[in-house]
Image (cartoon, rainbow, N blue to C red; front, side):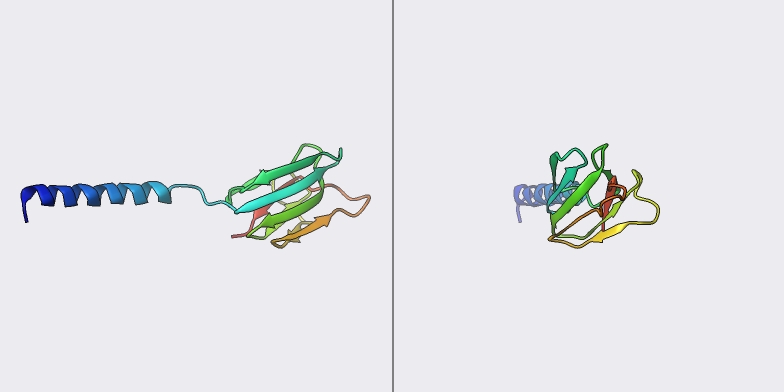
Length: 111
């Protein structure tokens, strides 16, 4: 094997390693959309949210939510994804609050 061929093979291996390492750092997302209606009847669509962390909804909260992602989510009436009275919303389903209850203000992704 020539020196040139070895150098080319080594360079290719290094570039492949760097490419794979770079891609593994990308954040994973919930593929699809989460659509919701605010307390002021405005429609909001979130496309492919991160599967990590707590996600805040509009300041007025959400009264209806459609989960059109490939993963399940949990909705919370608090801004920090904590507390009781959470609502489990499976993939490809929707829900709306019962009249007289607090709107949802945040959600987290189950992964």
